[in-house]
Length: 240
Ligand SMILES: C[S@@+](CC[C@H](N)C(=O)[O-])C[C@H]1O[C@@H](n2cnc3c(N)ncnc32)[C@H](O)[C@@H]1O
Image (spheres, rainbow, N blue to C red):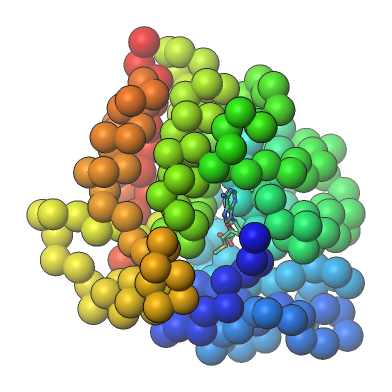
């Protein structure tokens, strides 16, 4: 598993990673400016710096005031730290199949020292039978389904469908999507081309296909939120 995918695009969706000494972290590219504040071993993503607050605003509006959240594909771990800090009555469990990502999550978490931020799990969305038994009310997945094969989306829906309570369980997806009734933004079209050039199994997902896959597992699309830079947040609920 590659963290982060070596993609340098106009979106800056994947960031340069620098450690505390300002050393470049192998395999990470971006056009964005560097972040010198990362602790040793931590990855830093300028895209995360930009999208954390808009995503948090939506999470605050829809997450239960208290509860347990599983984050799939946590990447650098910066979101996990920011969200756990901003939502102190939730218990936030990050995860990623990449050892490099988990090391970064651990580094950020050690610096943050938040009682409600749990250790990162090794979790491959594409292998839902390998997910540990979990008791969570919310699953959050940010910027993964277009940077992984479709099997990861299928597995995500299977796994979320299993672990989330019925009724009430919430799955939150964030990222760029294709939509039949919305013109694809030129920047998203270019991003899609770049992803497919890197791996033909990657690429922006069709929103309706994702919704249909979710529905197979009892997850109903209940909200579509337009986000900056032509991204969407899609909220799915178990509705009983
Ligand atoms: C573009 S990064 C996004 C990371 C983070 N969510 C963010 O927004 O910065 C994509 C992440 O998806 C993870 N990933 C790729 N395939 C996965 C899979 N099958 N299951 C879980 N995570 C996966 C990668 O390891 C990487 O951390």
